Length: 268
Figure 1 (tube, rainbow, N blue to C red):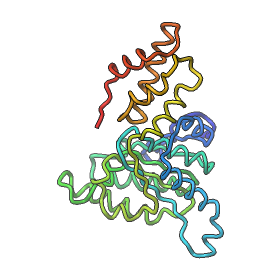
Figure 2: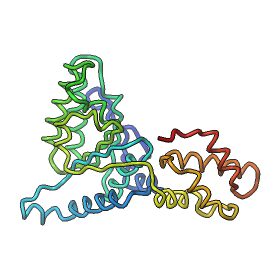
Figure 3: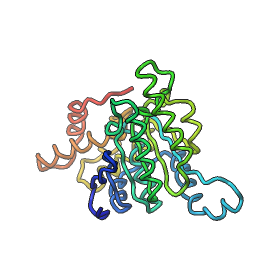
């Protein structure tokens, strides 16, 4: 396996496509526009600081945290945070799509979960499972109860046996559907929401940057994009930039308004 290649697929391990491997350098490219709320930034910084003081914490017999769960609406920065953590820790990130491991055959889902965790235990990394609720759903659900209960039980054992050489990060938009026993396995929890005014302004400034624009556009953009997720803001600003480029003119309010109408974000 050539780990220097970009966004490569990991080899199939005993019949399962393990995920995508990102080097720390590739992770850094992903997070150029990351804006973290103050609380989450503090959590991440403390988490990284503790991992850098492993010996001291072991001397005091205080466990090292290495399991993080992030929850909140889509498009609010959960995935980018996982990339950021991998970059800061100088570890590769293994991105696993759970739709690739859930299997209709009895017992296969649990087997696939074990293979993923075995891979992560064998080589230090940040193991990132998005859409975590797909395998960590409460065992009280009525859909495929027995099979999903087996998968959750396997997941619990894997989390208990994970060790501390790698970092496990999970993200979900459906935190209320996670099994309660799964929640107890995480030592770090981070809540995400749509950006407030300060975060929105910071993100819009990062996206527009030195792109030529008409006077006052930054303020209007921040106001007009109120209620949008980071992902929505990015797509709307990019659409507006394209319109300005096509017209060979500075970025204008009309470009932003039209892009917003075309994209039609869901505002909650």
